[in-house]
Amino acid sequence: DFNEMVRFAIEELQRTTEIHHILADLQEVGLVYADKERVSQVVTNLMTNAIKYSPDSEQIVVHSSIENNSVVVCVEDFGIGIAENNLNKVFEQFYRVSGSMQHTFPGLGLGLYISSEIIKREGGKIWVSSTEGKGSKFCFSIPIQRTN
Ligand code: ATP
Ligand code: MG
Image (cartoon, rainbow, N blue to C red):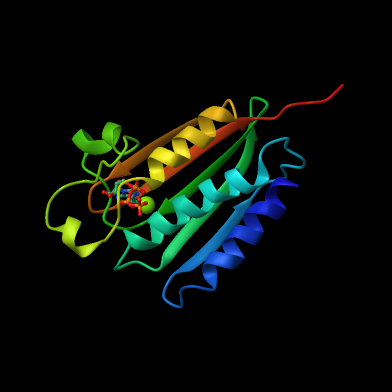
C-alpha cells in the first residue's frame, strides 16, 4: 500500500522536527509493486533535504498521485531553492551547490545520487523544479506493475 508507506515515512521524520510541518496531500494510489524499504528511503531523503534547505519556512508538502500508469510522488518545500544552472547537477555523486550554504548545511552530496539510483532500478524517473529563493519540488515516478 503505497500511501501507507508514505504516511509512515512522514510520521517517522515528523518526529525529528518541531519546527517543520510535513503535510500529506495523497491521492488514491493503492498497491504498487516496488522495493518498499528503498523507495521509502527515497521519500525520506527528499523530505530530509526539504527540511534541511528550508531554514526559514516551516511547510513541506508531500504529494502522491497516479499519472499514466505510474505513481508520482513530489516533495515540495518553500526554502532556499536551487539556481537554474545547478539544477541538472544535483543528482550527481558528491555534488553540492557551492557558496556560503556549503558551510551552513552539512552533507556529503550523496542523498540525491543514491535516490536516483534507487528510482532507476525501479524503472522510474526522478526530476526537480526549483526557483532560487522560493523553493524546490523534487518528484519521482515509478511504473505500477500489474500482475496478471
Ligand atoms: P547528503 O549526502 O547528506 O544527502 P546533501 O543533502 O548535500 O548531503 P544531496 O541530498 O545529494 O546531498 O543534495 C545535493 C545538493 O542539492 C545539496 O547539497 C543542495 O545543494 C541541493 N539540494 C538538494 N535538495 C535541496 C532542496 N530541497 N532545496 C535546495 N537545495 C537542495
Ligand atoms: Mg541530502
